[in-house]
Length: 230
Image 1: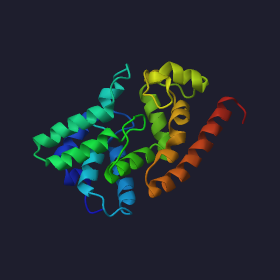
Image 2: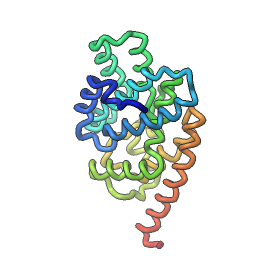
Image 3: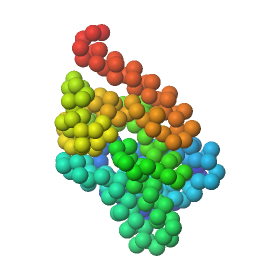
């Protein structure tokens, strides 16, 4: 790629950089990785509007800190982020058709949501964003976030009990109410292990399949070591 996101969209980049300050696990590094993965997926889809996709990638977590600091579970950073982004793009005089498409991408990018991506740009953002929680990067991010919000290393709470107590609606795909009760293995069991089957693009599924195997082996080993089985 002959440019970086901060070079192509300097005004938007500065806004996002400010909003994501202190948001562990969803930093600008995350956005750069999502962008690189998305470009690989987009290469197999020549109909993609790259400007829509790139702006959506840059802005997709802009409301992340607002959700992270709300222990009620009522703030959805995808929905709120789409509204914030639309307002910013209007102020910067971006065309309405582009704003509409970017807004859809952001609204539908999260896993725990009933909003399904329809456009190819939204599907690619969804896939690339989810791939970034898989593999070695996924393990590293899980524990970065866990440390930042003082989660435990591992939880032996039965999965059904945890879902009923701490996920909105008592559903496996419900948003987390209290992140302090969450742990990396619960994140893996309630969300991450299901990701490969939820992706939309062939290339995304291919990448995810490789990475999920690594994570399954890691969490099995972690459990064994905590139990002193090895």
